[in-house]
Image (cartoon, rainbow, N blue to C red; front, top):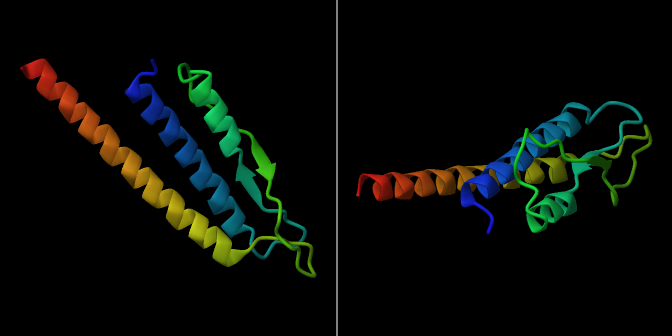
Length: 113
């Protein structure tokens, strides 16, 4: 069985790296020929299914985002989509932090008796 602390830690690592990738896309919204990037959520799920949740901080594969149409300057960053991704990732991150806090409080209560 996967330890809930390990799972939450792994999910927070994914969320943190996802924030950096989205921020990089936003920072390059006006950079000619820049191609939007995204993390492989499938890789995160595969790690969870394989119980590969221990060890050093995981670096997830960054891939070129598909489905975005390039503008005349070759840049395909969709500002609205990236802001929505950033907000969604922030909500996920906040939820994970709350879950981790609740799990820690439950563990602390169990230890104290």
